Picture 1 (spheres, helix red, strand yellow):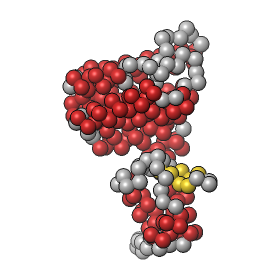
Picture 2: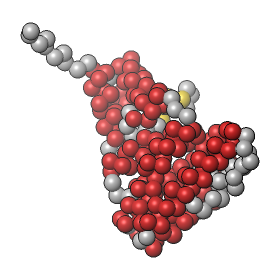
Picture 3: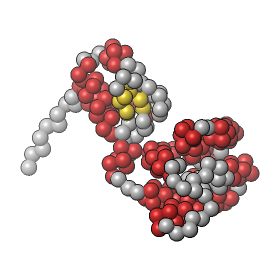
Picture 4: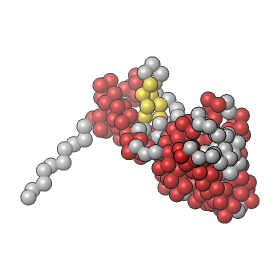
Length: 233
């Protein structure tokens, strides 16, 4: 059986690849607004319809978020978060994924963190302590992201950051539930102390203990059992 000819990529597909490269290479950081449509049309030499088709494609993958009247923002560095969002999953599923990743990331961070990484984690923790209730979840997610970066493994970092939108969503929901506490040191301050001491096992254990306590808290609330001491996810 003969194979059919491979069609040439459409212009919108080429624009998608150009925009994706800006995101994956970090030139457009997560959370920031990308250039306006007129700027992109001028830079890429394409019509508005072609550009919008590309933007919608990247919005569907979860890499971009189009906010009417406010612009288009980078939501993730890869398509994985969009796939995760479409896959569904409960808080328990998110906790299981975190349990598979966070202790190992903390362990590696204690082994490999550079001085700049430690400063970044400390600054993220300080911002978390100062954050208002409205900003606290984003500040907490920034702490976890800083620890993941300090682990020095780009593949694990990419996998973990793909989980961050789900982590943000799960913590936003947890924040409104009985027994939620902002100031749990396990998995946060204790991890930073262990990283500074270059103690991989202590860092991993602290991360694991925080997740275990969070899972128990969630289980108690779900079953109406007497709640364990409050934790911060």
